[in-house]
Image (cartoon, rainbow, N blue to C red; front, side):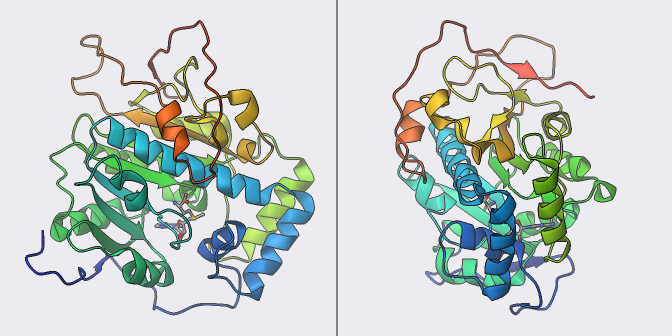
Length: 330
Ligand SMILES: C[S@@+](CC[C@H](N)C(=O)[O-])C[C@H]1O[C@@H](n2cnc3c(N)ncnc32)[C@H](O)[C@@H]1O
């Protein structure tokens, strides 16, 4: 922890682009900000959002479903005792940030915000840097070694202790040739047993071919291309982790973004929610296959009350027992 009360400097881990807003095309961070009703976007971002909305009117719903998952997952981790969080691909500060979400449940929480967009990091530093509790780092998830080295140098996050790794709506910007699964696996491998990974990822599984094609075309002109993946491909990010049931009565498996931590899956289901799959997985405390572990509690009521979407659903009990499941390699 820094000894004085100044905001922490931000770290640059690995090579970076020059700072400044590139408005020659839409930026994925600004486009997301636009969908969430933020103020940090330009005409090029709004035009891109309009083109997507023409074929997928539920774009804003999808963004909110994802942001809701991010907040609920972070809160649930805090309720499991996690006190330090690494928010990779944190995005522009628009809604409740991770620290604000968890601090009610974990007063001593620490959050390291990471993004590879210098404009995001500049905003994050201005708005999210809280003395001693948060850090901001410019780093690329495709270079996990530099990202981990940056965390180590910064010192806010102690990787010897369990942590919550949030990688929401980021890995669909990483091409298969950059091995997105390997990048996440290297970050997870650096976490202490008892840590959690929360990850969401866009899918075309429920999109019409025309919508999927249009979305791909819009992102082809953006700061990042978008790689929509199948449920099985997204499940691979959780290889070797123990998935937690997404809501009371559910199987421990991937679900749609709006459903994770919901109280009523029927009410939480929507077209927008189905645009992303998500899950939370836990790094086991003991080596795989050695013994049964007590299951972490199921996310639900308490977390749902504080979602960024503001939805409060009535809990619906189902008779099947929540189970833990390990995702196998395809
Ligand atoms: C759609 S926003 C998601 C923000 C936040 N994680 C959420 O779910 O609400 C995607 C963010 O990921 C960042 N991003 C994209 N590719 C990245 C990469 N290779 N490394 C780090 N950040 C990346 C973008 O700059 C952007 O801020």
